[in-house]
Amino acid sequence: MGYKVQLKTWKVFATDDVEEDLSEFVQYLLFEKMSEQAANAVLEDYDETLGELEKVAGSLKLVDNPGLASLGYRRIYFKRHRYYFLYRVEGDVAIVDAMYHELQDPDNVMR
View 1 (spheres, rainbow, N blue to C red):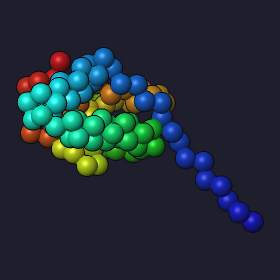
View 2: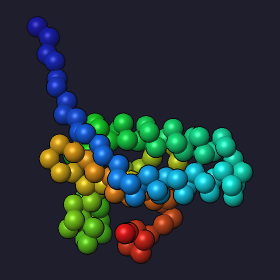
View 3: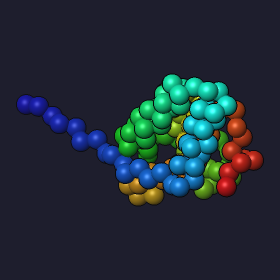
View 4: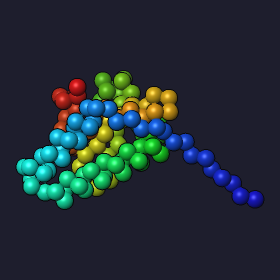
């Protein structure tokens, strides 16, 4: 007798703001750091993190910042880089609103 576990998955929607954030980080790596390899690695990690979010979106805790937590924000870190997404869950959708480098303060830069 075998059991099959059905894991919940979320649809992931990255807003235009996130696409803009990603573009700024990639442009920085390409034109300031002159590293196409680093830019490609971040793009790959970005895609993988969105894929991971499909599996874990509802299980991650709210952020520690009370203001952001009151808006339902959670954080997921990239596996191989110092970036993370701020996202919120609405029903079965994870809405990614922003991408930050870990040295940035979202309190001061959140749109």
